[in-house]
Length: 157
Image 1 (cartoon, rainbow, N blue to C red):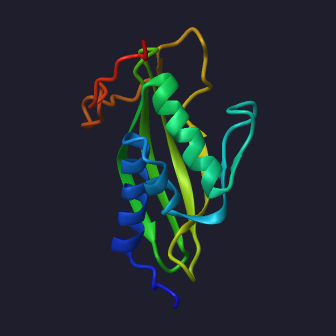
Image 2: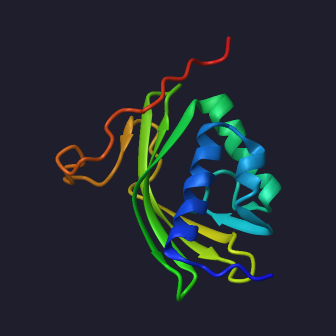
C-alpha cells in the first residue's frame, strides 16, 4: 500500500535516520531506506558511494565506533510534490576534534515513503590539516548553528 508523502512524514524519516546514526542503531538506520538506496559523496571520500540500506547502516555505525561521530540537522526543507528534501548538517568527529558542514539532497520513494537516494555536498574538502571544515566567512555561531558536539564520546580503549 503506497504511503503518501507529506512534509511531516519526510521530516520524521530524516530525523529517525539521524537519530539512528547518533545512536549507532543499525536497525533504525535501515528502516529509513529502500533496500537498494544509494548515498553519494564527493570524489575520493569513503571509498565511494554507500550502496544498499545494509551498507549505509553498517558504515554509519562504524563511524560512531571509530570516529566518535555525532550529526546534527541544522536546516531541513521538504517538498512532497517532487519527493525531494534538502538538509544542512554538521558532522562532529569527536575523537579527532573535527567538525564538517555540508548539505544533502534526499530523493524519496513515492510508493514506500522511504529514502532511496542521498547526495552529499561538503562546505569544503576534508583537508587533513583543518579541524573545522565549513564555509569561509559565514558566521555559524551568530546564526545559531551548533559550534560543539551535543554529545561527548570517548575513544575506545
